[in-house]
Amino acid sequence: MASETTGATSPLLTVEGLWVRFDTPHRVVEAVRGVSFTLGREKVGIVGESGSGKSMTGRAILKLTPPNAMVQAHTLRFQDVDINAATERDMLAVRGRRISLIMQDPKFSLDPVMRVGDQIAEAVPDGSGTSKAELRERVLDMLAAVRIRNPKRVYGLYPHEVSGGMGQRVMIAMMLMPNPAMLIADEPTSALDVTVRMQVLAILDDLVTQRGLGLMFISHDLNLVATFCDRVLIMYAGRIVEECRAADLHKARHAYTQGLLASLPRINQRRPRLAVLNRDPAWLND
Image (tube, rainbow, N blue to C red; front, side):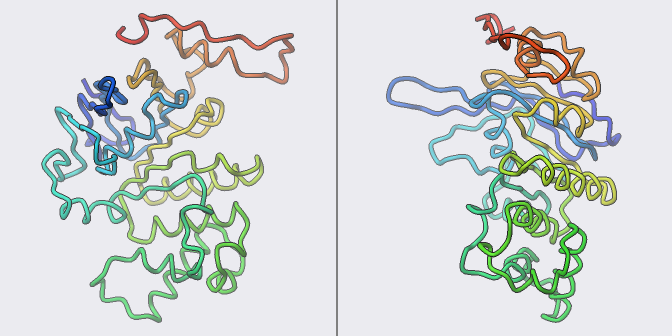
């Protein structure tokens, strides 16, 4: 069953029984196994180790899985769109317009031969009726909204001329230009230092709150998710093994979640060696 949202009575996204499989020469690999959850106008964190299925879940929602992926779901719905039945043409009206995806490293996501302002402007759907002058003002306003100083100067820069933190803000500005209802942020701060990371998170928090967006925040960082998100889904081997309020993450009951928390270093708790996660085969199917 899908979980209840805390952010709205009617969820933006409903996922029930999502499976993503890959047929390899040796066996069928199940990357996502029966995942179910809902997302309202809130910040939901998805955490787990590399390979747990976090990013693949986000890509399945946008139908951006590799060609050899077999995706099945009992229910996969975003607002009025049945993603299960949606064609590629239908998804073009969803991806980047109603659901935006923020990637983790702007160096690999921004076009190196296009000026920053032109790339952000490209995110506005064709046929919007916006003049070039109006579009430029919208871009400048959006750059200011993500707290970039001197937007007019940054508008004309190339990606290699901006810092990592500024590049990530440019990515956020680009994804917000079409006024989406939902954001999927896949490790959006992993390439940033701690100070810049907190600045970017503050921007996301303000924008989600002010615009009433739904945010799926994919991360490895349990401490970050616990302080930033409203709810947390913990994934292991393609499944959601536990869900809790972010503020109650330290009270997690599942042994896997407890193991992840125990492996974190803590300034006020000196230990000669960090705990090692002891995996139980029962976690695969419990």
